Amino acid sequence: MEVKRVLLKDYTTLGVGGPAELWIVENEDDLLRATEAPYRVLGNGSNLLVSDQGVRERVIKLGGVFAEGELTGWVGAGSLLPLWVQEAARAGLSGLEPLLGIPASVGGAVRMNAGTRFGEIKDALAEVEVYHRGKLERLPPEALGLGYRRSALPPGAIVTRVRFDLKKAPREAIAARMAEVDAARKRQPKRKSAGCAFKNPPGDAAGRLIDQAGFKGLQVGRAMISPEHANFVVNLGGATAREVWELVKRVQNALNLELEWEIWGEVEP
Ligand SMILES: Cc1cc2nc3c(=O)[nH]c(=O)nc-3n(C[C@H](O)[C@H](O)[C@H](O)COP(=O)(O)OP(=O)(O)OC[C@H]3O[C@@H](n4cnc5c(N)ncnc54)[C@H](O)[C@@H]3O)c2cc1C
Image (cartoon, rainbow, N blue to C red; front, side):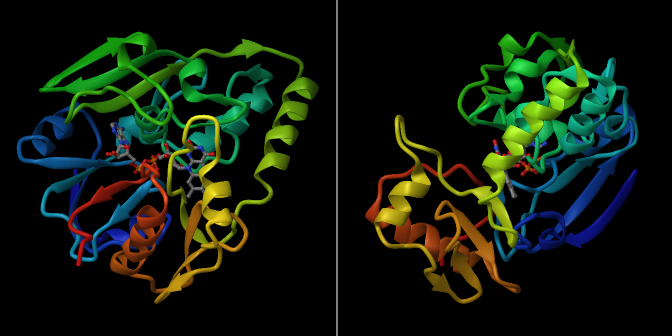
């Protein structure tokens, strides 16, 4: 197991976040040791706003046996979802197409029930292995309480492996579906971000509401509400968590929106 001091801005897609102790676990023994003191689990860091002061808890990242696997068997939760989306398409197996373009780890995607308007990961799971209080348990997806960008995993539970529920399909049909999902993503900003900042309220789109309220292009320091997609906060290079949080607060003072991101550490000034 590797343990090192890192800056979490190097481990998040937004490129924001201060120091932490990173524990890269390779196997079950490592998992037991790493979870002996308070910890957080890091996936691909694509849904996180991390404090400039970093976090005090250990940050566990799944590597080794938890970052490998087989498409038709158990897949490590530390591996990247986009790789499996592509591999399934190559193998003529359907089910993961709606998840095209989501830069998640498999475990983070399960934890957030990641998805698009075409479908969610919840519909592509056969079984999920979860580590909790020193034990690994294999559960049906229904046991995880997966809903719109949420799960009911108990605090401290770590998704370690999953089995996908995929069906044979003609490759052309899979490619056509993926092209459709891809086309819908084209409007997304290319700059560093953590995806959608706010959840969509029932029957509406957070991006539309933020746009309508005139926030597109609003900048604080090096953080900006994307002019392309109002539900994205982008890092123009060197943004701090404080600056990003200031934008979040301004939107929330005007609109009653629930954050989709998870906040790590202290971001309030
Ligand atoms: C450009 C861009 C586009 C995006 N598009 C979408 C989209 O279309 N749909 C969508 O749903 N999301 C989207 N997102 C957001 C993000 O990719 C998802 O929320 C994703 O599920 C987060 O996964 P992660 O591995 O990066 O998790 P992290 O951001 O690392 O962590 C998120 C949460 O999951 C927990 N977690 C991570 N791994 C595990 C594990 N193994 N076991 C238990 N808990 C774990 C963390 O502790 C944290 O609570 C986008 C993000 C970006 C940057």
